[in-house]
Length: 637
Image (tube, rainbow, N blue to C red; front, top):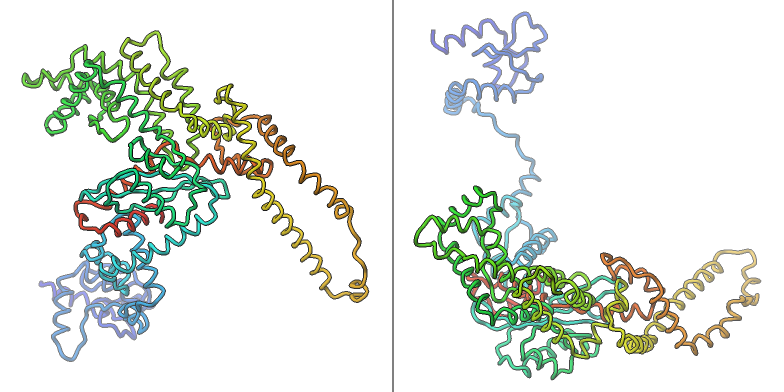
């Protein structure tokens, strides 16, 4: 019997649904003894279909899933006949309002359109994404999937309108932040982009009123002039003037040791701090450059790194040897002359992977000459023992979000007494390297102005105070700090008087508010003479002695700061000053002034890393002003 005949026979055993209107019910029915018609039976397969009364969704689903061939055949027949409607289940009809909303795009002036456009602009700038991304098919498909009503503007709009507008708004916000800055420090550096266009960077560092360390990128300006000290000095002055920053408020200027930078600071008369990272890097280079043993060992390391970097087969063989010898599966490190510490990291990694390297290289006769000899291994171990502890100091002093200048004197003391001190187990080469590095570092920080700056900053750090200041200089530093406390007193007095006047005005407002309340004897109260309090009677006699005892006040504050216990070395000194600035108003001003100076010029180095991610090989045609905008937004958004 054919399938249609079987269906017809099955239909005879079932009764149709009463008062049904949907065509789907011709394929389903109920048993004759089911008077309530609660169990729906398929006429084709006689299986029970769970469905609510009058709901046909499950019936359509069952028909399509179990009997798709009959479903499609019947659908075609129904659609071809003129008098009957199609059997295919149509989706629920949308309302007029929802259909209108899904088709009508947002007006360009609408709030929603502006919000999405601003979010895309922020994404392009913050993540350093090429502006051409907004025209790529994948990005257009993404935005259309997220919101069909949003028509994304073209790339020209983002390049010429959206990003400049965001730059102006962000610049205004940064200008507003800098307006209340009393003291600040700077870092700067020169850099050449992928297209060999020269740029000069400028970052400022300050401590805000909440005693939080702040760092702001101000510019990555095109600098086509000759990189002489005179031109750099003029360019930096123009940069500070463009941001309404007064040179008199500049505490210090942290740069590398380039001659033109040193001369620029001298021409402008700005205090300058040598970058600790550059100094340490030069000290290491000076200690290892004249030793033939070290030169040979470093040459072997570079050949090893180059050999394994240019052959994927050797890399796979190295990984296999590392697994066999139970060594960490680390790759070799290439030395970069402009990155501090990469020389030591390269040597340390080769010492770590020495057995795996020897095993791989010894398998081939043509590479056996690359295996380091025992003399080379001894030299590398001696050099690594001397230099490895110095890497941690460079990393610790390169931060931007915490105080770093007050660490310099403790670090130099630690280098002298522990890290670079002679050890009985040290080889002759290790002792020689330690002596040279330590002598170089101490000689470069003997400048009196630098010593004074470091002494004051260390004293104002509640973790150290006078501990690391040479005894013969403590009296001089104390007098210098007291003198600056006296100079800072007018500002402190103004702030104190303003707070007292605001409190008195608030009290007066409360009194006037109380008088304004309805009272039965309002007229009588207004005519009464206000009685003077005891505090008001003594105000004159209390105020005049305090004005004449500035020296005693400063001495008391200074001595109190020395007598209170030092905080733990792991605590944040700025958090401590934020709590105790009420007790030490003069010293807190000096802490705000001196502790903002960075110990290294790393912020400018990081700025050029960001610039390198903006000016890529795919974006080599960016104009200098657009580079400045994009770097500024990426660092300040």
